[in-house]
Length: 209
Image (cartoon, rainbow, N blue to C red):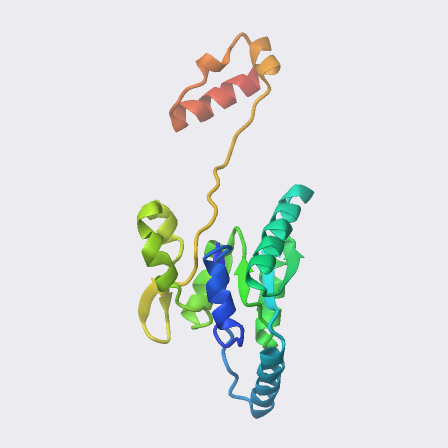
């Protein structure tokens, strides 16, 4: 799931990148005068720094991170833009992101596999995410409706629902079993029920054998 930050000088580049990698966050201005001045200074600095800042979930295997780095490098060569990637673990995702946002620090693009249930609903409610409907609509027909629902949030400021994230990944939970141990109970894979109630009862019965 990819999202995008609101008050960022690299917004145009981030929009372009969303078509390739996708998603962005938004930074809300503080009512505190000192924080406002700090935010203005930070934006001026960002106007000089055209590097696109990308936060991404660290992969479980090195090849995952390497594949993204290769994709980004190719995009840099094709567009002439620069990208700074920061990988972070799933454990640090929520606390780190919230802490940085409170301090006025945010990436141009933020990607997390669990953001639809841990971060995006709250950030959208607080008007901290950029509406990416213009990115979703042209490719809406290729998405499964269930995937689109995970990116459709309520904005508490404008009191409307819209797309505030771009789904780029879908996963399923797998349950593994040891075939040799199953066969020792006198059963085979063909004996495993295909309905949930029957499946769990089957597991209990096998576990007691």
